[in-house]
Length: 304
Image 1: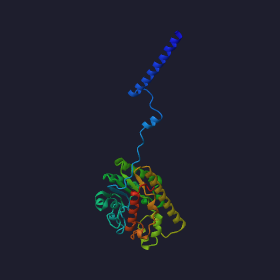
Image 2: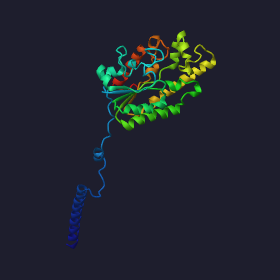
Image 3: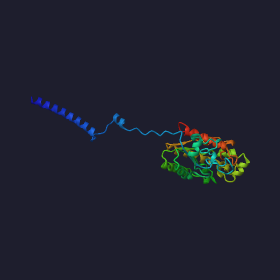
Image 4: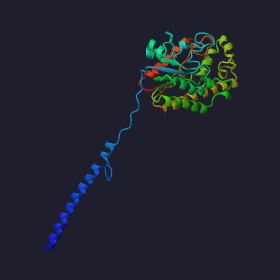
């Protein structure tokens, strides 16, 4: 009997202990005690999902442009002069149908687009332009810069690829510190060697080139010796490296779109080149740049 009683009491004690243990665990969970957290399926269900990548807005309501002489419409209207009204980015000329007009309409473009590009500027000047653009709080900023970094007095004077990368990163950082959600469209640097190839057939253009337009590529335009060929190929390689930098840096920013090399690959012909210098885009060329920009900005996915 004692053995049976002892065994019965042992069974009962174990059952009570088990019940108390379950109750204790339940109490700790309910009150946030020291019990271990959930695991397995329940843990995965409780873990917050990562934030989705912000969607690209294909219809921004305001626009600011930064860059160089191309965005200023240089030599598109008269010799050696800016003509911002035909700018591919913010111009008002109906023959160009600029990106701003395509996105905002003529009235909207006049009120909500701004051009901070400067003729002769290089990538080192872009952070300052970005700071100016940020004061308007645009929903989209267009970037076309880099040609002047390659168009120097000599090959050795070109901006190094490392410096170009740092300067472009600084420009984006300047914008992001002021406007974290503003979108950025980045144009590739044009194919400078093709522009030389097209323009060198015109005697007037070669006289104007001697005034100092892109000497590293356009200097001694008729020279075809090995030294001249090497010089032009070196400039072209640098332009291609710049475009790789633009693509890579832009890809790290969720609200940045590179044009996928569209401008570099476009085969500018005589109709698309200024008849004042046979190097900068004409009104027709500006219109083609606007078309490419609009296609990239309104595309469902980034061209790059």
